[in-house]
Amino acid sequence: MLPRKSRLLNIIIPVYNEGDNIRKVYSEIFSKIKARRRIFIVYDFDEDNTLPPAREIQKKDKNLRLVKNRFGRGALNALRSGFAEVKSGPCLVVMGDLSDDLSSVDPMLEKYAEGFRVVCGSRYMKGGRQEGGPLLKRTLSRLAGITLNWFFRFPIHDVTNNFRLYDKALLDAVGIESRGGFELAMEITVKAVKRGYPVCEVPTTWRDRSAGQSRFKLLKWLPFYLRWYLYAIF
Picture 1 (cartoon, rainbow, N blue to C red):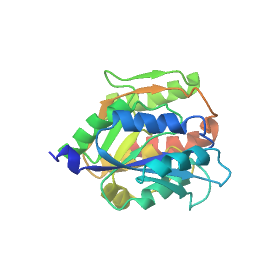
Picture 2 (tube, rainbow, N blue to C red):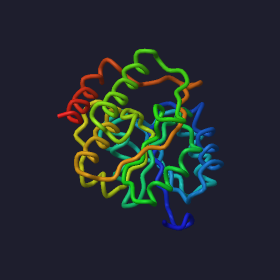
Picture 3 (cartoon, rainbow, N blue to C red):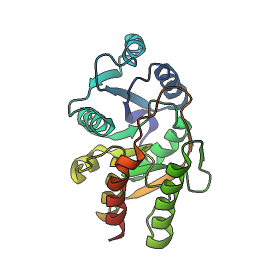
């Protein structure tokens, strides 16, 4: 197992007007993640209200970087831009809305040190849970994960949660074909399983945002999720 102090964790945070949340997210990172870390806050436009508080944080933390989305606006391209900034090692995707439980990160890093190349924060395995969120979105997400696990022996219970840790070399190897939004997590995980990379999950709690506005577009992105669901089966 890698010594804890030798790991550099790359944390990628896509944001869209998260000015009310970003200080709290940074505080959570600082208090709950023990590993050495580099933080990439990825934004779409210069008027984003996340930037003023993020710049104040940056004055005190030289390991925080502001990255303008280089591939075009939207969550998918923000994540691609963040991944492009990382040369090697573990990449952790964290939402800027305080929905992810960062106390799960150290256990995720332990799994990475054991050799797992994708480590999923799972709401639907034993010990995980979800608090809030639209009923339809919750139901479809749970059904997708549970059916793949039960009937097709997929190694995880939660295929849609974006709170994930990836190995950078794996990201480079499998590539990204997603065209919508957050189905990116499902694509990468399904491809990793199909290609034989070690994939696992750790329990986590997801909580709906308390401030700001969600940009999740269920009906628009549903066909893209369905594509990777069918890919996992066939």
